[in-house]
View 1 (cartoon, rainbow, N blue to C red):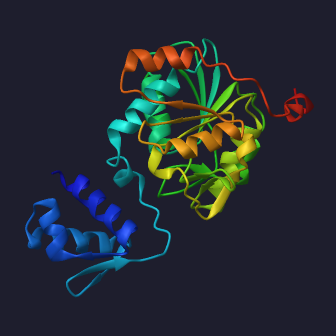
View 2 (spheres, one colour):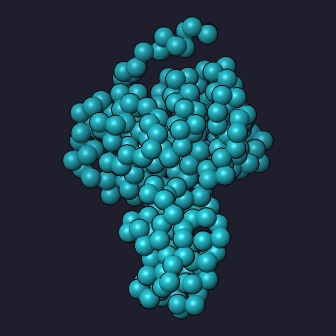
View 3 (cartoon, rainbow, N blue to C red):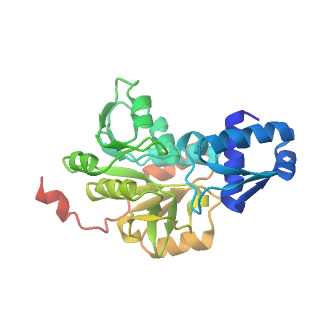
Length: 281
């Protein structure tokens, strides 16, 4: 197991259980206790946990993992979601993209396209897409967040408000029927909502572990979400509740060809007012 994958597994464990015991977790990861102690010390020095005698404890009650560690989690599911979601993008579209590991997979699935414009506040997404001269990439300004590589705040929102977006892909840390979409940072939530307000279609992309969760800052209500793209491990009951709330739900099948066909045929009716678009048109 690579060191990055091992650290992601440690952080995933502590996020779920609140503590890490060196003996048991070293056995689970099939590494020596000495190796695990070095990993715990490195994570402690990064401020991601607190070392204790025999293990570690979580630093906070709502741990937000840095992007470099989140990328290793549920990677096959996120890649499938990205491919399915990319099929929703029509030719010539202007596409908004927030940050996040799943949205990054959407961006990667769109790299072969040469007929779209991408507006993003995610530095890592912009860095990957700018290497493709056939794509037009617009990066908004703002204050950089080290955990997500996103530019957020009033400066970002002023720029986003200048554009008309055909659709936007929104990454979340939690999605619940009653509480809507949420994330760990209030500035990030406000900037993500700016993308939704300027989009004709808001598409949330997230793996199934985020469904039913609520985190610190609300991005939007559930009636502001047009589509959800998630993986086939999602709870069918929860997906049914989201459909009842008016969200068009797309679930990966594991078959890339079938997923693309499903996405290209999905044209849900519009449910949200677009009055805000006409005001500055």
